[in-house]
Length: 252
Image 1 (cartoon, rainbow, N blue to C red):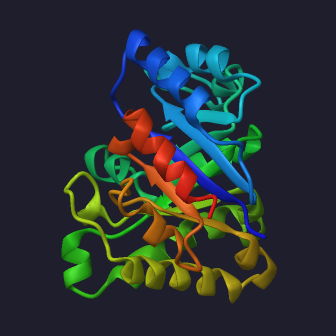
Image 2: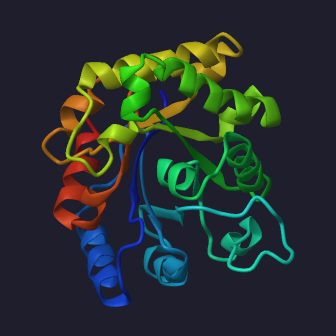
């Protein structure tokens, strides 16, 4: 049975007081993980220490939203994988559409960050997905194939044994729009089939998340799809009741 995962991406939100209240509510409200389910929150860098202190020994894992591809050096403002290790991070998001679009991260840079995360013992959550323009021009599969190929070329398909993929249609992030469950399933299946052509066992066991405006009221239907193994949750991860409801949906 594949691992299931609901991971919150707080993006650039939060403060010490609000974060503490949110995490305490999650500790109380989240059910014990069953059926290979896992929960995680990916918090801004300044709050990793408090997340570690609050969540250590609980059913909730934590991680970072980004990392440098470099181990160390004169890279002002960057954070290395080894630094994240000091705070017990299980996960590191790489290739989020906001990093690709707003900060110009190429698929090659994303692949290097993926390798850096794995080298430090973390599980990269590799984000792939298309813009509305790319979907309308019927190049979704080509775009996603290119994004995956960069990682597989650098790290090898076997590296996916210790990774998570998140499909995030860019047109459905923060817009209130959501791919239909069948639209999301179709792309998840495309991803799994493409990897299966290189290693069927890894493809079968690979956790693939949906990351496009998952809400408490649509999570159950999305997670019922055979190739959707959970969600990378944005805004709803900042509201305890919503995130708890989404995590409960992954148990079914």
